[in-house]
Length: 546
Image (cartoon, rainbow, N blue to C red; front, top):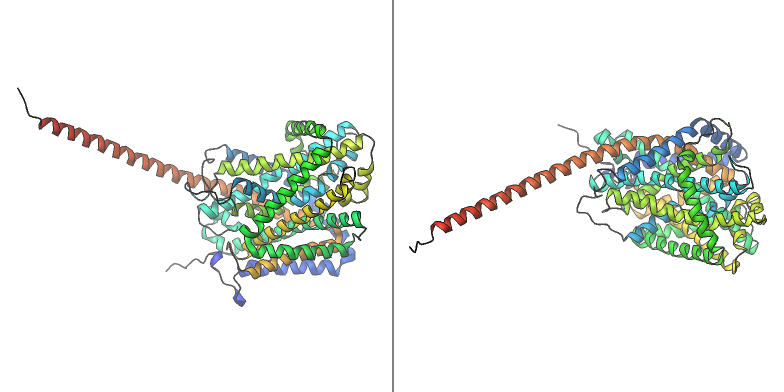
């Protein structure tokens, strides 16, 4: 008698918890050990984090760069291929959310905090110390925007699209659990419910938690800097820890309410505030310059995307990419289980083409305009001789946004809006991430018990707090790159698995359509024959009047 297969979303663990025991406890214990070691060796933690980051980046930076390019090419291919018309959840499935709500949720989860943190600071950094051009020149300004667009554009969203499409497809079209292991069903079959599947999900949980911690850590650093800038409140680690505690508590309430009542509403309000904030900056700032530079920045980025995306510093021996491109690729990969799974949950009913183009194009274009409105304007001010922002970036990167807004009318109120917006993105990232991690550790259950959601919401805040204590931004970046590396390998395999799965289902669909066409043809022929017979009989029964 064949052994019964127990799906990961049907498992019951010890203590009566509705979780997948191996994934839940291994992930939790690993996180606790890392937190404990960081707190115990706090004094030497920063140096260790720096050395680890340099080692990984130097040895595997090329792999990150190659992998992310593969993901983008693969997504573009799928969008315009024969698979484009396949619908997530079956050909008769309908979208659960309106398109605008869909865009709001995926953007809030995917970029929010980081974009606010880096949209001014990164262009200014690259302008002052560009990897190729002479610093402080107009050419340096163009290069700064090209690299910033590269880091926040199509490549980043391609990573999210790959994981999101894979999860959505295998969950809603194949009926498999909503978890990373399900993506590998075409190769592993029912073995995804064993140790191999558990290992995949454990990597996903750890990568997600540290990717989230990076964003949350940046968010509280920026909020603390804003409070210090406005009211002189100390912006040190203690304040940051208190902020993490308060905002995590709010995020926990959203987690309890769920996707439709909590996450969706917060995401939509975040987008309203963000778009209003953006509009104010554009209208009150150098409006014409912003639109002109947006066109030029986008054109420069598109014309140089091949060169920039494959540049590895092979002939210069420099270390610029370790702190920038490699960090970003590691960050997006570490975030991909979280953002991908969240996008998957809200994308049932959309075609493969609609999904990919929606995820790649719309958020990227909004991001480009946002970076232009803030980053290009900051560069414009710097080129005109105002070094206020460049000094702020060098002194404390987290203050750049608030110093930038000082040149605007109603600066005080704009700074308050900025703080609210950062907090809002913090909350949506935290609550979305908690739901996702709970999915992973419960074996793919879409609606796991509230208590478990609360546990992971608190865990995310705890990891961010400990990393800030143990090494600040450096620790956050290191954690992202290190956890992103093994998951990059998983994503490579994911490409093959998704292609295999789509190919299998396309063949089945084509076979069904052919069978249906044949049946329709036979029915039509049968109807014609019946009509002909009826006409013949009618003619034979007509009386002859001659």
